[in-house]
Amino acid sequence: MIGFIVGFTPIAVAGAFALWTRVDRRPEIINLLDASPTSKRHKRSKGFDAVVLHQTGFSRGNDPTRYRKVTAHFVILPDGKIIQLHPLSAKLWAADGFNNRSVSIEFAGNFKAATGKWWSPDKYGADEPTPAQIQAGRALLRMLKSIGIRHVFAHRQSSAKRGNDPGPQIWASVGEWAIRSLELDNGGPNYAIGGGSPIPDQWRRPTP
Image (cartoon, rainbow, N blue to C red; front, side, top):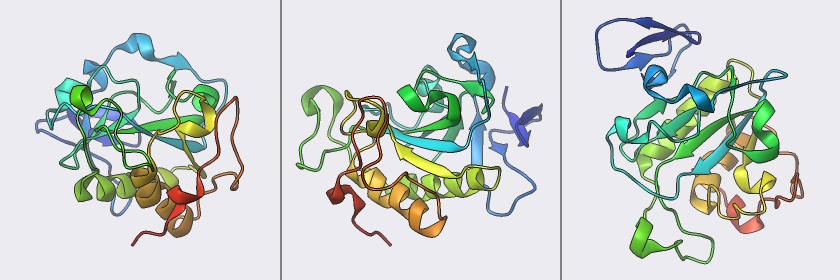
């Protein structure tokens, strides 16, 4: 179903986009809730208060329907489109130890590490986050803060296998921006859980 989203309840209407209403500067969000696998959704044992940022590790272009099986609440495409795949009330197996308390946001692309190298670029591409993705990510975090989000984490902080997730470019441009501009908490310079790794200093460079 594609329609307007008021709060978090989709209401069917004609049109191509889903809009968040009632709060200024909420971004347009494409609603793919009914097109995404419900088997990925689990019951939370408590409310959510955090966002976890990810990179998909691949890009399938700007067709929203090609991302419907991604395990995340939101995916931000290279052209800045935001798609919602699962309701915020659902716990997803997306962020390891942060699963129960978090909303997961994936940025579509295979982004380089702090070393300047990409993971298997011949197979998965060598992408750069686009300005449209960065602006969309910031707008989405601003909206999520308005409904109770107080923390922003990187997937690397909860997983030993996700050292470049979401990568320095996304973290510096969206994660650090949210810490500075939205006053979201990241747990501090050495914070990690469950075998994850803290945010490296080189990821924390200031951005406009």
